[in-house]
Amino acid sequence: MRDAMTHRGPDDMGIFMDDVLGLGFRRLSIIDLDTGHQPMLNEDGSIVVIFNGEIYNYRDLRKELIGKNHIFRTKSDTEVIVHLYEELGESFVDRLNGMFAIALWDRRKRKLVLARDRVGEKPLYYVQAGKNLYFASEIKAFLRIAEIPKVLRKELLPEFLSFGNIYGEKTLLKGIFELLPGHILVCDDNGLKVSQYWDERYVAIDETPEDESKASLEALLTESVEMRLMSDVPLGAFLSGGVDSSLTVALMSKMLGSPVQSFSIGFEAKGFSELGYARRVADLFHTDHHEVTLRGEQCFDALPRLVYFQDEPINHPSAVQLHLLACYAKRRGVTVLLSGEGGDELFAGYSSYVAMLRDIRLRKLLPRWVWKGMSDQCARLHVRKYSKIFERYAGSVESLILGTQNLVSRRDLARLLPGESPESEFFLNQLERPEHSALSRVLYAHLKTRLVSLLMKQDKMTMAASLEVRVPFLDHRIIRLAASMPDHLKICNGERKYIVKRLAEKYLPRDIIYRQKVGFPVPIATWFQGDNKYIDLLREKRTVDRGFFDHRFIGEMLAAHKQGHYDYSSTIWNLINLEIWLRLFVDGEPLEQYPPIPLVEHDVPLKRSLFAKP
Figure 1 (tube, rainbow, N blue to C red):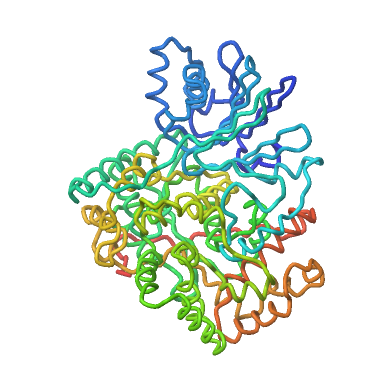
Figure 2 (figure 1 turned 90 degrees about the horizontal axis):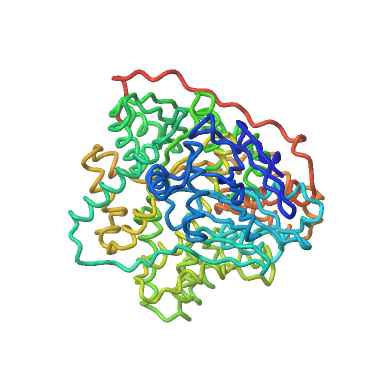
C-alpha cells in the first residue's frame, strides 16, 4: 500500500508494526529535512503518528508545548502533533492551522485516530473489509489488498454524469469512503466512530464597514501567505493572471528576498490562454517567470495515467495542464507552489453565482407548471439550451441551485440512463440552511462539495509530480471572515468577488482586476469535433457490453457535437474518463500499457521590458 504512493513521497519511507496495526509512510521532505523521519513516536513510544501535509503554526505550538515540559527531538511539524495529542487528546485538531491527513496510534488505549483538515486540502480514505480497517491517502493503495472488492457503485452514475463528481463520503468503488473534511475517525475496542470537529456558520454581520472588512482581509491574507512560505526547499507560485493568484504573487514578492518563481500555462488554441495577463503580472513584480504552451495531443496522451493518479474519473479537464505544469516546475527544482485556489468559492467569483441569483428572481415570475410547459416545448423544438434553463425554473429553489451545477439536462440523462435521478442528496443537504441568504447557502454548499473536488484535483495532480501546493485563501480564519461578510461585499452591482477586488486595487492594475474572468480553460469542445482515439473508446465492444448506457443516444450525442448542433463536450469527457477509470480500477488493467505522460518544455525565455499588454 505504501509503495503504491511512492510519487507522494519519493524522499523517504517508513513502516511501524504493532500487534494489531501497521503504518506505512512515504515522505516528500520539505520541513526539517534531516530529522523529520516518519512514523514518529513520543519519548516512551506510546504514541505513533504519520502525517501528510503542513502545520503552519507549528513553531508557536512547539514553544507552548516546551513550556509544558514536552521534550522535542526534531524541528519538524510532525512532532508537534505527537505532543499536542498527549496534551489535549482528540481535540488536538482544533489547534492546528494547516492542511493535513493524520493517522495517530495510541498504544496504551489501543486507539487509532484519523483526522483530515478543515476544507480537504489533503485526501484521506478508508474501508472496512472483514474484521480489518484500511486507510490511505489515495484509493489506488487499496488495489493492493485482495480482500477489498473492486466493484462499481452503479447507483452513483447519475450523480457522476450530472455533476462530474460524487459529493460526500461515498466513492465510485463500493465499500471505500472518503473521510470528509473537518472530520475525525476514531477506531478502538468499542468500534469505529466518525465525527465532525469543524464547520462554519455563514451568518453575515451586516454592520461591519467595508474599509474595516477590507483591512481585516488584507491582514489575514498577508499573514496566511507568510505562514505558507515556511520551507527548507525551493518554492514558487502558480500564476494564471487572475486576481487571486496575482494577489498571492504580489504579497509573496514583498516577503521574499529573491524573485518569486512563477509558473503559467496556456493552449495554442485561440481564446484559451491567459498567458498575456500572467506575463503582465510577472513583469510588474519582477518574478522569475516560466510559461508553457500545450497542444491537444499532449493532453490526451497524458489522460490514462492521470486518471490513475486522480483515483477517479477526471472531472476537471484543467487537471491535465495542472499536472503538466507541476511536472515542469518540479524539473525546475521547485518542490512547493502557492496557489490562488479557493478565492472564488469564498467570495463568489464565478458568473454562475450572479446567474443563480437572477434565476431565483425570474423563477418567481411564472407558476412552475408554466416553466415546465415551456421547457417541454423547447425540447420538442430542439432548443436544448432554454429547455435546460426552464427545466430548472420548474423545480424548487434547492433544485434550481443544484441545477446550476448540472453538466447534462434531466432529459438527456434520462435517455442516457433511463429511469435514473441525478440529484445529489449530499449537496441538497448542504443547502438546508434556512437562516442563510440564497448566496450564502450556495457558498456553504460549495465549501463542502465543489471546493473539495477542486482541492482533490489540485492535490492528486501535483503530488503525482512529487510537488506540494499550499492555498493561502483557505486559512480557516479567512473562511470565517468570508462567512461573516454580507452578500454585498461579495457581489455588488453585478461585480463578483467585490471585496477581494477592492483589496487588489492596492497591488494590481485595474485592467488585471476588472477583466473578464476566463478561469483555467481547456478547448475540449473543439477537440471533440475532430478525430479522437478516445472518442473511439466509447464505441468499442468492451465499453458497449458493460450495458450501463444507451449507446444509440451516445452515438446521437457524438454526431450532434461534431456537427456543432449542441455542446456535449462535458458529457463526452465524463464518459471517456469513466471508461478509462473502469479499465484501471475495476477491470485491473496494467497502467504500463498506456503511453507515458509527455514532458512539456518552457517557451522562449521572456524578455523583461518587452511585455505587451494583453
